[in-house]
Length: 356
Image (cartoon, rainbow, N blue to C red):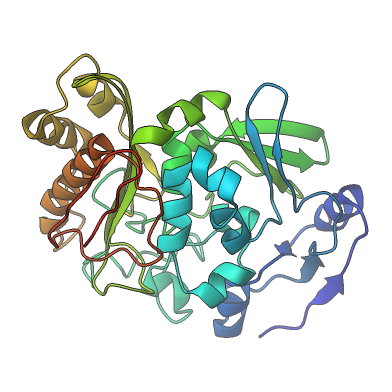
């Protein structure tokens, strides 16, 4: 680990000023940053400890019905907050599907949005990685591509964004609140993360010194709570990053879909909003055939980035299954460790249980 300066500001303004000096990193839960510093994959010259900043650890319902989640709210606290879990059950389910209980107790909302890719070549400072060191190449290409991108990738980078939490947030039109040297601003979470293109090191829309202060779910997101699910396929049942994931939310009038939201995770360098698939669903019957057709629409344009062509069909199946579960109804209690998506499922709408 490199030598660095340590700063603990008392206000958001002080934090932004300290980070604006350049080559700085904000520290909250540290569940990703510290690992990367230990391996040498990240070498900031200044650490800005924001854990004591006031007002960033609150979950608030605003006057317009939207929910504002402070950047320092812990993942476990958000997932287990009964009012939030009732209002946004798919987001709570995604949080409970991520990492271990110990990590959820430490990780923060803002830090989750800023997770770096879990590509092994990025984490290894001895491997060529355009995301870690621009212009050096991409050793992942032609290497182990099992978990690599199938949408939006480029020859410069085939890594995927690892967050569970961000997938339903993107589906539900979440907004990121940011404070920076030029003052406050907002960015739709769908636009917050960048696709790699020729500059994979430019991972987000954050500018120098800018700090995430909150994430906001619009009031409309709450209208999907009766039929919303997050589904994660992983190579082992617990404590693993997703091979593919999907967040699905529906509004139903009888057996007809009146509105739909669908986003995919671990298929691209950002959570992937499947807007064309949503259009396929609206006004159509909530049937297995229609869900499969929508899932296929979500993967239009998907191409293997290596030896991972099977991931396209996996993504289609996971999206189809997520839509099926959403149509069955949100369970009363979200499981902390969902089982395999290919296990038998028994679902009962509006307060039932889900097994598998």
